[in-house]
View (tube, rainbow, N blue to C red):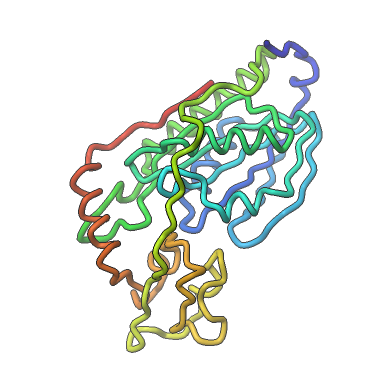
Length: 269
């Protein structure tokens, strides 16, 4: 079934960008897609640290972006978007993964958006640097790169053309399986902090999406709360936060070996 109410979509001029992006890879992709669509008004809602409960109208266009963790949408993201409500509002869903596979995450995000009242007209999976990537075992290092961002902009242009044509499919089909990939219980560990390097700048505390790092003493991390997003590791100005866990090192080594051929974005439109 297609929507052909051309006049109603033609006057649409507002984009609402919603993203969970601890290391800003998803944010970069969503921003560039929004730039490509090019509507005159664009609003950002960063749900990395806080939950929001916006209600969207039928005339709204919403881009929802999230990272992929082990082939799924992180549970914290599901909680953060739980109060979003659409009214058959047009939506584009985007996942960003670390060059392995996006598995069932894009389908899961599409389903979540649909359940919240959004009409998902397009979806995409882009590549971003893996959370476990480092100088020893780089995994999709420095992605999204310039080419990725160009493709994200071009994707946005295609979405704009689709909307202006009025020939829009309801809740587009995407790759993935149901039931979704089993969500395995992650072991409770977190990055450690080297006391002699730490300047107590508290940047890691401010950036942690689950408040796992003690607000009074950044040397202390509650491992049970850590989602291993690596925001603290990748942004620490003194390189005091590091993953020293042997499991992380073994996964990084394996992904570095098996996932070293750069993948291209997957677009569903």
